[in-house]
Image (cartoon, rainbow, N blue to C red):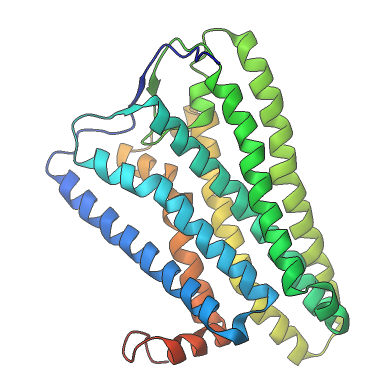
Length: 316
């Protein structure tokens, strides 16, 4: 199939001339990326090696940590390269690859968080039937379905974007964004199919997981209000890390959506702050998840102490 895009590369206009500060930014981003890779990799290894963690909740966490590595790999290497470079052009192939990686990351993250909320609902509301319902095999199948669905869904959306005839190649961000590429289309009629499919995708990818999450927590709260104080404390201790992760990810997605779709409210925001806000969901989320779950969840802390070399894991 002939590619109708007449541009072989895109220009990322979100980068500004920061002079010698670009090296400071590069060091900060590098340290952040190394921390993300280290923290998530450690917890993935710990969950895989420790047999006591081969339970549904920790399998979902392992999927979450793998996705954080996957998503951060789609942003950080390119971001680090462009920070110290005067050329902010990116080839069309790499641009579309980055779009695919970052959008599928977002879909997997939200669907995974929805599955985790349903898992907590079953564990708290149906403790006696939980082990029969959420078996490790079913959890693995559900995780595979989440990843396959995310890849398949966005493959279709990206193919609709690639077919567009573009009349520009300047993207006003520090990374490639599907919505901004679609806006470069020469004909608004060509955008119609993309917009319709994108709207349906938002309903399936955002509305359905959010309904699952809200419904699960409403039922959890209802049960907790009728239970003893000890049961409430146990429920809250397992739900707080999940809620923290969910709220942080939702906040990051909201900032990204606000910047992409509504540029007027963001015009008076300083460039550096605007750049940080645009990548917040992929900078903070992959670092927050291992910190929150690694610190808050007792079994993971204990497994880290048992597996990791002495001195590598902080004493509590």
